[in-house]
Amino acid sequence: MADLTARFAGLTLRNPFLLASGIWGESGDSLAGAWNAGAGAVVTKSIGTKPRPGYPNPTVETYERWGMLNAMGLPNPGIDEYPREVEVARRAGATVVGSVFGGDAEEFAALAGRLAETGVVAIELNLSCPHAEGFGTEVGSDPRDVEEIVRAVVRRVRLPVIAKLTPNTADPAALAAAAERGGAAAVSAINTLRGLAVDVRLRRPVLAHGLGGLSGPAIKPVGLACVWQIFDTVSIPVVGIGGIGRAEDALEYVMAGARAVEVGTAVAFEGVGIFGRLVRDLGGLLDSLGIARLEDAVGLAHRAPSGTMP
Image (cartoon, rainbow, N blue to C red; front, side):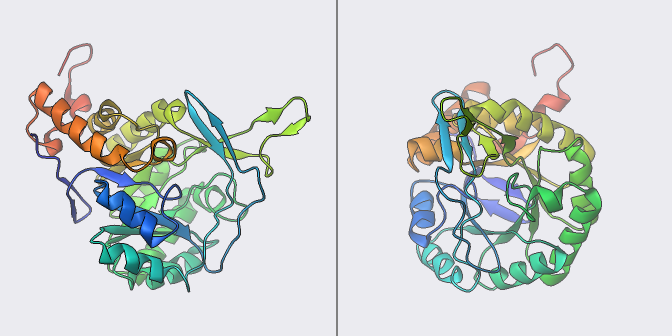
């Protein structure tokens, strides 16, 4: 079988499939479960300074064929409690990436410093949640803010820093360039697209918060376009996110320029067993295409002459 080792930002992962933040990773046991099911690494819930209960229900609207709309409100136990969960996952042997969110550069740096002490292998900065007031997209849509936040975190920790970027902007590639200037070791793209569902009988939004974030197969073309543009803009690695549920989806992202991918909504629908299937299917797909190593496929679509097969 083809070599599925994923190498980026100084990390070496057993395969390119990471559990995405916010889907399955609130507890150490759930992180360990994804790891034991075959994930190449697991990304924690985004952790903040204080515990947050999140928004009231309903927080999720699912769509059978194209994904889900959610507005969870960044629920998390806070940085004082969460290191215990990281330890549970690490005792199970998991490779853990810590995710943090904050309202400004100082808060991001402080949180990253605390989480870095738990044994995580990298820090992912949530600069892209589309519906949490004062966080996410609100602090991650301006390249100047992105650069400032990334630089503050890079100065605080000695781990690779990954900036998770929003698609809810005119130029995601400019945000990636700002993250690179700030010293990011990699960027991940994308987070959810801002969306809304309306109940016509109740005459109000379906989600209690109103606006939410759309994820799943419907956003894959957007995610691919962002990865494609970012790959052409920066020299740091890209982690692709958005609508990955099949080996073919993952390979599209890799050929567009990603060195690894994160899987979220598909886990919510199918459970963590999806990781084992994705690993097996991607190995078989690469074999069928005559590609010996995952690394050989990174950016391959950029090198193919227009209108021809690679």
